[in-house]
Length: 388
Ligand code: NAD
Ligand code: MG
Image 1 (cartoon, rainbow, N blue to C red):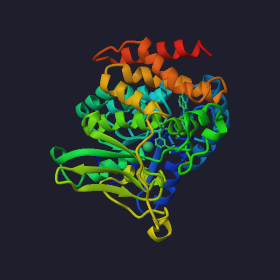
Image 2 (cartoon, rainbow, N blue to C red):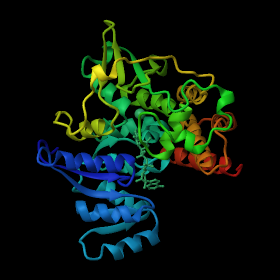
Image 3 (tube, protein in one colour):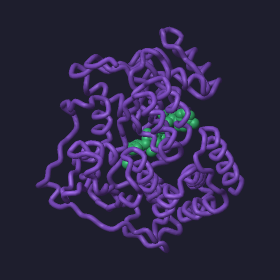
């Protein structure tokens, strides 16, 4: 492995919330650590991809759609950037021989195959896409070990746990305290949530994120998915992961050790912190981000999550305990339901109902192959989408 040299990265999902912030981190680190962007990928935001390609001079730009690729090829004709398309194009961005690390920041199940591809090609992974670990945790962690690559969590809670874990060893860990902001509907009753709209749900108090994860934060499905993510990343039982609502999002998560010491990581809620740490690990480098001002903050508050109102948390934990393809089933149902909610076809509280009914309609396959997982995802998504 190349050590202490410039880092060469591909960013899967460079046009998204995480992707664009990662590029800002790369700008911020210029002169401190040079990070070269070898590949980028997006979906429909062709104009932003063109702009990014012109600024960062990657070797490769990937888009799913053939026609979008054609259009992008024309607009980048005066550059040396190669435009590639489809799943093969995404694989090329993951697998390019010049790439050291792949930032997996596509949203949802679509990120799974290209991320697995990157691992198999020996790339270190900076993982924002939690859905990959939720749906294929077992295969994913096996591939990480087999290919001897680094896995750096970018999800803020998991980055915090990763950093806190450095204070002890695995045997000394008693439990993980996974913090949750509570989302925009903290304190609301089910009756108050019946008619909430997309724009109500998209108003997150502390974080500015992509639409899907913002809705997941409002239902607490995001926290449920993060419990499963933590189980795989840190090799702990779901029963040893406790969700704590912490409204201010300053403590990004904590680890409780056997001597009752609790170690946590604090910073202002900005994804640039975990993104930068994933890029610079094991080093810490100066950050352009703001620092916590405790005197201004005054207090930090903690609550039990309201599992009766926000049922997705229990459902996801249950799916995680059942294992096999059950997490794929709940994830696919949730992605379909969230799309439906964003299109005005599904009501807020129905998201949990859809997830729950999928869990009872589909049975879990134990020890699934990647194909089983892909097939399950497709089948569940199709079945759910037919209903609205
Ligand atoms: P986003 O919607 O802002 O961006 C998603 C990216 O994926 C875009 O670049 C988009 O073009 C691309 N994309 C979408 N569908 C695609 C498809 N079918 N094929 C190829 N590319 C596709 O999402 P985001 O908020 O940046 O989240 C990305 C991932 O990071 C998610 O898994 C999310 O859970 C995780 N995450 C995000 C945050 C955050 O603050 N945004 C925090 C923690 C974890
Ligand atoms: Mg998170």
